Picture 1 (cartoon, rainbow, N blue to C red):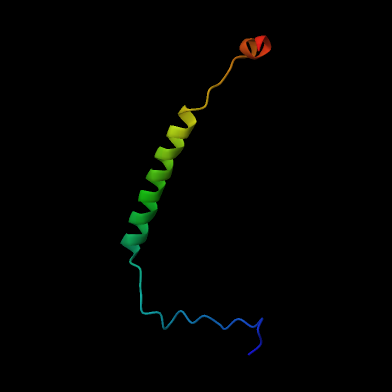
Picture 2 (picture 1 turned 120 degrees about the horizontal axis):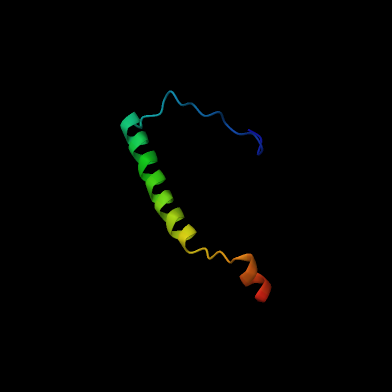
Length: 56
């Protein structure tokens, strides 16, 4: 086998299986976590008015 040759992956012999419920639950949880972090970060943004930025 050559160094750059990658062996094929056989998914049929995989013993571990992931249930659809676990995938859905995980994606919902990650979406909620990322949304909460995003909301916290967006609230920290301070917008200045045009008049305020001209005086600075």
